[in-house]
Image 1: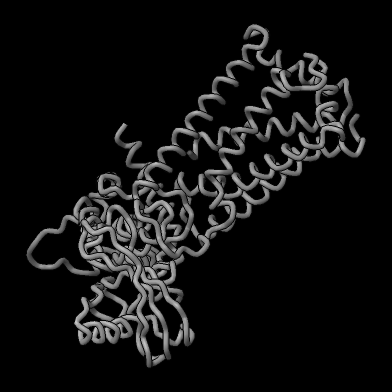
Image 2 (image 1 turned 90 degrees about the vertical axis):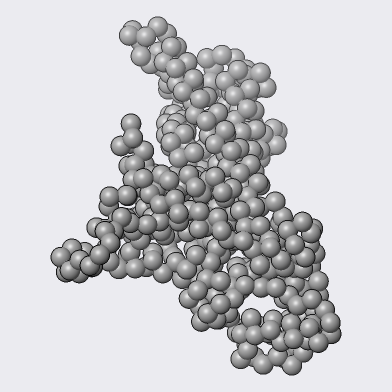
Length: 210
Length: 248
């Protein structure tokens, strides 16, 4: 969970920084998107790097899900008879919603790929016109898309808030002070990520990007 | 004070079990929770009913025998307290209190609130020991132990193996128990020869016994009557990682 999770978080951060280039205007953003296809050239043929990264990410996602399913099944088997009286788990909201939160994030990722990678569900849907695809996607009339996007990103934020420090613990963090730092860092990284991702659709909504 | 308890009654491991309500009247607020159950049991015996079976031994909070989930919390609502050290003054007159056994596949119910915690012994047997030559004890000062390590080892060693961590864990994992044992021996110079095999074997025994996996929820440490810190699980993970790497 920890290793695949870290890989995915690293990607999320790079992806977020890329997204923020939308604020530098249409030309810069489209140029950036085009550059992504040429990373690694001429050592690698065009778009090869992209497919290598996609393969690694897909393997990480599958590994992450397999580990989560194993943990969930073991948890169910470990407590066949439920408690009659069970107060809310004392752990954080984030820790309690890891499993369902993860499912929501997965559904979102599938939608997101169909929307902005394959452009199947995109209202503009022109390859290469990335800026327009995004701007039309989050147009005020399509508020439900923005709503789903917002909910999903917040779900990612909660997932990371528990996931990040839990991953550090899994890899062996053990000092009480390190624990405090890890929790604080996880919170800051999650909030920055959520704000960074949500800035794009809300900028479209208020007309900063159109 | 008068209260009502809803207690898990289960005749034996093959019985399905159910919650049953009992009124307990005129209980002193200074009675412990187990003494309250004693009073109830005396009444049940006089009435010709089957008394409620529950585990208990020292009744001073150090043996780890008492094991009951009170209102959904292992050992009840007070922090760092075993059920025998929980007093009725922490409840209100007229309260309805639910009492259930530890619920885990690895802790099968023997009767009512008594569960078989033998699987914790299996984890200990897998590696919770050191190799010590028999005969005369070595000179104690011959092996210096840094104060910091001694303190942390002692903190880990206060684990009484009651199983509350398993009862509270949403995953039914025994990670805090195993981590406490691994840490308390692994911090000492005497525990070094088996440090790697200990963590590998104890975790294997834990998995084999049907405990769940740890997802760092932190429930265990919250209910632990000895306040074993969650950071020890990080220590166990670190030892596990190093032991695995040495196997390569």
